[in-house]
Image 1 (cartoon, rainbow, N blue to C red):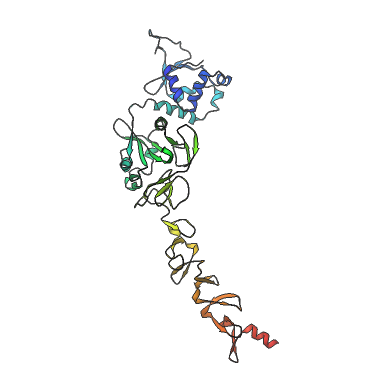
Image 2: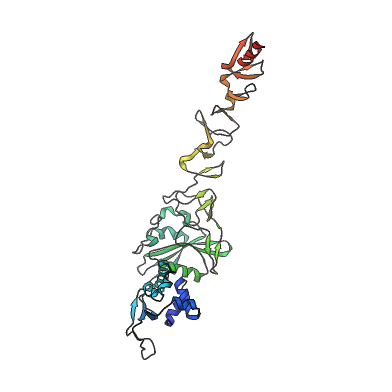
Length: 396
């Protein structure tokens, strides 16, 4: 039977990692499956170490006790969390786990020993300063964030009263992690995507959110699944939110979750005029198709200058250019003749041909009570005939 120290058992009970939950349940639930999955053939008597390693007793050593009844350090060894924990599983059982499962355990374990790190919640007005802070050494998602050093783009955050930012600092005051925190309807506080310099710090942020009674993004490492959250009860929830805030600024950030919106609002679901998915300070939707009610790429956008939609932007496919005048191509003020568009006043309808012609190409015929093409007209005894009709008369 695997034996844990009290401190190690306490850690297992609190950790949300898949491996930790299994090891904790195996301690108290005598399921046959656990006996088949776990083994003490290599290690046993696991305990915490303040340096973030796991202390264990190899299987070929005998456990010794100090005078106070505590486990002696004699014969014990230390190892990295994921490596040691793998030794508790049989070879067959290891096939049912991914490397990411053991990585998750290790990150959760490391997070417990981050005593030199501290959290702060900063006001919305400080957010641009946070994005321009010195970042602690390391890699991670924080160093790869496209908005680092772009505080000038963040006025939409700076003036949003529904927003705060949770930051993680090391002992030297360098930034180790950050996450936007939104204050939403129904008294919901939501922690957004998390950026950190080391993966184990994700667990610190999640633990902070859970302890605070906040919601957090389920996929907290990416911009995906913008409407899937874990609520304060630990339940998965799909929810759409609207944040009412000023959106009229000269530049804009890439926004992970509240990526969409209209004038005066941000949303975590598709729709609306604007999309905040650029990292160059711009947003999509500056060109809005008022006719089809959708966003336009700049290269496709055309301003209508004449007709019922004069002053509106639309896709160039929806327009007709008539002598430098831009019309909506279904405007009642224009007509199509042989695949080209003209102003209605420059065209005429021919009852004889049952088609629209250019007025300059036509002549009025009293005989036919209709416009006909000049090229098809014949003058006879002062009357204008269509040549086909005159031929019919002559044959008669």
